[in-house]
Image (cartoon, rainbow, N blue to C red; front, top):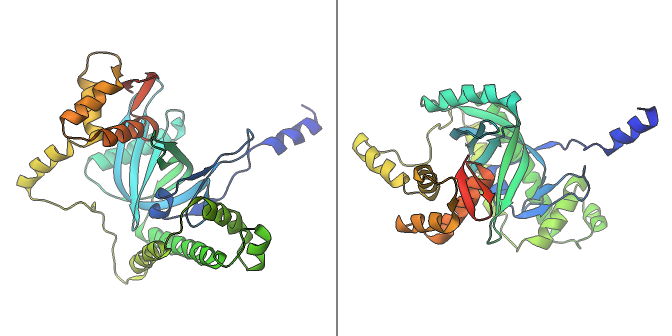
Amino acid sequence: MGASNMIASNQNRRIRQPAIRIFAQEYSEASLIEEGQGEYDPSFVVTKLGARVNRVMVCGVIDRLQRSESENGPSYSGQIRDPTGSHSFNVAPFQPELHADVEELLVRYESGDRFLMTIVGRARWFESEEGGIFTSLRVEELALTSQEIYKLWLVDTADSTLRRINSYTKSQDCEMELSSYLEFGIPEDLALGIISSRRHYSIFDTEIYRVGVLQAISLATERGSSIDFQSEEVESSNEDQVDSVNIEDLQPRKVILQFLGLKKEDFVDYDSIVSECSRQGISREDAEDAIEYLREVSEEIIEPKFGFYKLI
């Protein structure tokens, strides 16, 4: 390959986007997608505060981690929790370089250990039939994290969030043009995202995100404080745990996975899955959302042909 061709090839490659810091609440409430037009153009999830999310660095307590098998190899899905909510993440079969590290974490998780993690990942999403957007992360890097590092991340993320809150608030007095934003002192790296946000989202109170910032700062700066590794679910006595497991088994995703596992057919049609959920007291809407989640986010089921599903 000649030098000129190499230069042209390098210019066409995807530019690696910075990994921004963002709390789970802001990311999970985003519903605006800006998809790149060209092969190497990045896509973004745009939050209400105007963050354009392509890659992120997030931290939190492990809340869920599981492996799924397929003919292409294992995949992994899970959730980590920060003070504002949980991030869903996924490691795909085509990422074998991460599998050994995730397996070590899975062994610890399944033994009952709970720990802090840092994840650098790429934004992912899927859209339900009703038009709802569900966000998640495709893991690029992950590692165990100390409480000290987690608290530093909380402070950095709180600072980044406050910067977006302040810029979004300031934008209310501007015309929705880039030049006007820059004249009002809104940083250039935030201006385009805020313009997109104001055009897409209804007016909202930024106080909901400011509360999350205060929670994070409080946790990070309180002397002698330790991170709560327990799930937000209410703990129960040993006698109550049996009942809680039975109730949890009625949740849509578990019902669907169990139903597909019991069926002898290779493929199970959509109506049969929804009917089984309905028989167990689950609404059609919740069943449909669960099917989409299992197919697009956790990737535990596939749709080999339209309207028919099977376990991976």
